[in-house]
Length: 112
Length: 115
Image (cartoon, rainbow over all chains, first blue to last red; front, side, top):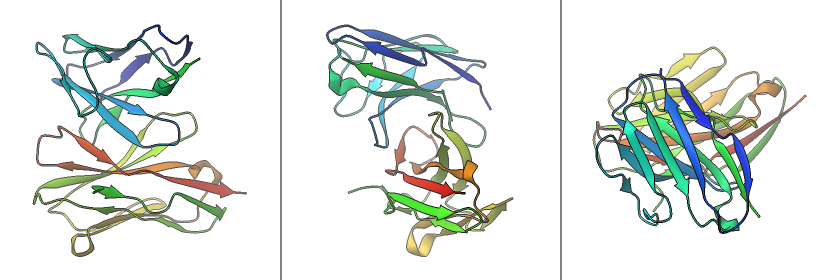
């Protein structure tokens, strides 16, 4: 299965600022996925990032708030823009693997 | 409606007890995949098992076993002789079709194994 390196692992940010989360995969993958896990909750898909095309966002998530880049087949970024305390969550990237999806270690974001 | 339901929010057991985590899913697709993931306190998601809709055979892997029953739309997970290291949140998930384009996660079951 692919190995994902996700950065940063955690951050504390001021409201109104933006944070960019990076995911690097050790193999080429067509699709990468970004999830949000709010405190004590399950995972919710934010968007699907395909290389060479615009990301596809799920209902309730918009590009202005969560812009995504996918410059090549091994890398993607998710930016959480104009943050508010409600954005405090774990953000995870994921790629399909042989058995199931592989997830990054997550970014714990706290907005103060 | 929830596509994946994990009715047990939190379960506490004493070490060496057996414990079953329930998962009920809902889909109209004939082809789908079911998954279990473990999320320890460190936060990463660890893949445990994938099952496709055409394979109802139960599976055993060490102390872990899974019972897939299409008749009741359930995919339950049993840990035998639980250990403290099994303490984590366990998520059941569903992916419809062949493309793995979208996962539906259950709300998770937090398992506390006490020494």
